[in-house]
Every structure is written in structure tokens, then in C-alpha cells.
Length: 283
Image (tube, rainbow, N blue to C red):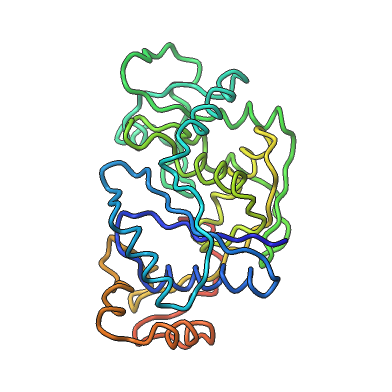
């Protein structure tokens, strides 16, 4: 059975890009008589606002979608901690006290998320009594797993290249945001039985890392479906931080949500919005 999910973070209202992603995940599941899940990814520290989860449900209902809701990330902290402890025991996590500015200054390469961490703290004696991040030693991890591949249903089979991103953070320095997206989303999808991870192409590169984590922790390996992105008139993907018009505003203004969803399915986009069909491997 195909199981898909829509997993928004309650740090801002949903916009048309979220609607497009939710509709794709919903329809892929329904066409296969599968399950479509809603998971609230609410561990973004002080930025997470509990009231937005209710707004998200109202938005999805307005679009005409039906879903099963699963446990939010805030209830899964123990699972993230257990996974991190297992990776430490395997000798694959190390503490890092570097700041972003220090990393930017020392980096000699650029990866999917910006400057690639140069491994400054790998093998160093770091005081873990102060706040530190915990990074995955990607080179050592690949030595344990060997070569890996993963399947995107649109782009085909991919050779996993987690090394392109360097030693990524799995446990954040900020205790209010305990696990990184890479660790939390990978564990959550496994726990929820997701078989087809449907998300935007801006997260294509993250899948190389997620594939590695799955191999290390012996998790089920889903397929992926990285869909095209909605862009604004300036060629930028829609984003909460840029104030893209929210679904809630459209809903409260009396717009027909079912009609909007059907238009998005047909590729008929509101003025000033375009669909980018190019394959993006950088966030």
C-alpha cells in the first residue's frame, strides 16, 4: 500500500506551494487506494506556534483533502535521542562547537545548504559540558554502508552522494530544536510507514543524506517523488519568510478552495505564479 505524507512546520502560514505539495501527496495516495498522512513538524524551537496546526487543518479541509493525522514531532523526542545514541555508539557522531561564521570562513567548498563544513572538530577534544552540535561523520558512515542508491519516481535511480553536503548536523546545539530535519524526518517517515516521500525538488539533495541514515539505522527505504516548485514572478520559490500570500487569507476572503485545488491539479496558476519544472538539487 502506498503511504504518503504532508509534514508542515507551524512556524508560518501555508501558501500555494504547500497546497501544491499537499495535493500531490494526497492524490498519489488516493489514486493507489493508499493512505495520506498529516504530520506536524513542531520542534522548531520558539518559532513553532501551536495555534497554526489548527489553521493548517482548516486549510487542507478547505482544499477538499482528506487525511489521517499522526503524532507530531514534539512527541517523538525520545526516538531522536535513541537514534543519536545508537550512532554515537557506532562511532559516527562527533561534537562540534563551531559557529556559522567560523564554518563560512573555514569552508573550501559549497554544498546544497551553503558552505560545506570542513571537519574542524572531527577528532578534536571538544568540551561537551557546553552546548554543542553533533555531526555525522559521513566518510566513516559510508565506509560502513558501502555505496547506496535511492529511487526518485520522476528522476530515476540515484547514486547516493551524502558527501556533497559534508558532515551534517543531526543533533542541534540549541536544545529547543533537538533534532535536525535530516534525522527527525527520516525517523518519522519510517515510524509512520511512509512508502512514498512526496516533497519539493528543493529537498532533492537532502535525500542523499536520508538514504545514508536509513542504511545506518536499518530503516525501511521508501521511494521519493520530488515535484516541481511554484515560483513567484521573480523566479524565487514561494516561502513563508518572503511573505508569500497565505492559504488562510484566501480562505477567509471567501475563495473557493476546491476550485483552487482543481486549478492547481490542471497547472492553472494564479497570476504571478509559475511552475518550475527544472530539477533542483540545491536548497
